[in-house]
Image 1: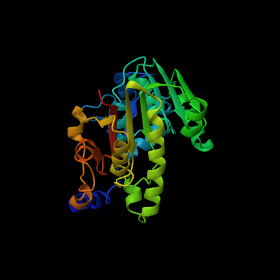
Image 2: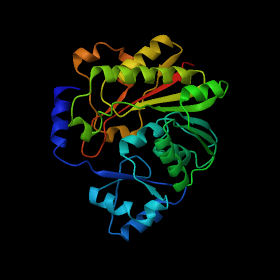
Image 3: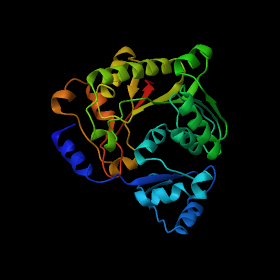
Length: 298
């Protein structure tokens, strides 16, 4: 990030990040959810150009957590940035989708909501603890047509080598530097960045064999480090010249706090990767996030 970006982040570190939520349209409507929240004295603010997404205060978030509207799955506490990857998948009802790093189920449930509850979704998570959270989210939010698998993508691939998907989400494990509460702690080592990057590249490479001819892969992380982001995507494109990046030009992009790489760092990466990556700067309203959209060349 540039020095200007870092200065803005340090200023935002002085404050707690605002809360946010997503109305679960598999269970209710925005009007009904907002009516229930208003009865609690909570008045969420709609985030521009993202349907069903709202910002709230931290105090309001605590109130919601103890209320039936949350426990019944009608609303889901999900950061605005976390909602971006699924919105970039260009989903349509009836699609076959893979969420390869699914827990705790935020994007899993959002994907099925974006498909109006139709189609099919395979959700993978190898960690027993995180898998339990995934199952709970699917149950609470009444997510239909979804199979949760307690396994790694590598093992799922070995057991289902011929499964093909219209869309694949790789919201990969990362160092988490996009979160304000981690940015204020000890620096993450370069060796950890490289370790996470290797894991991400392996998952991205596996996804190729499961993608339909006209399919789309969305790759995302909640870190700001280019080793885990641009470097992984650039390496993938070099080894898979049949793929290209897709420009993320949704209307909501204009309302995101974005950040750039330092000039000397940016010089290491292809122009396509720099121009078509979406880097969201950590701020009071947003977690830091990186998103890249990949498709086969027509």
